[in-house]
Length: 173
Image (tube, rainbow, N blue to C red):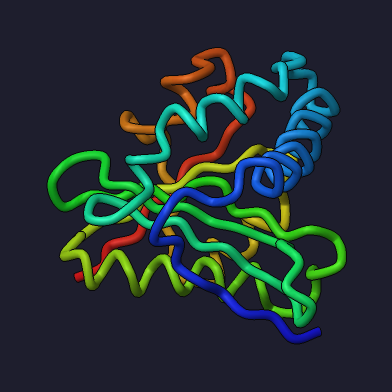
């Protein structure tokens, strides 16, 4: 499958983005519940994206949208500055049609490159314990597993998620 990754320079089309976010949060909540975690309302995550859209837009962040050859939205990933020199990668998602194509890795590598261009020295990320694919990808790309990320925006939104999550850090220097 051919795909392209574009940096959003303005707010994405709301209905199209909401459909992708709904797929993302449905998959994440399903994994969370399978691990004994709470049934977090999907609408909370979608609203949080829109409430913090400016955080993932230039100059302080990035929103990357992935499209297939027909132009359908098949994935996304965000990057935001959480404090001077530190960025956080969030909302990496690839729809089933784009999985196994290298798109997930490309979205992570794109955000790492953007973080360097933004002058960030450290990236943090988190994922659910049941998200084995992300754990493998972070390990493959040199992320170090850490006990916690005090700036995790996931924990700011839903603090009770902490025991169901794993945290990662990557030094960019």
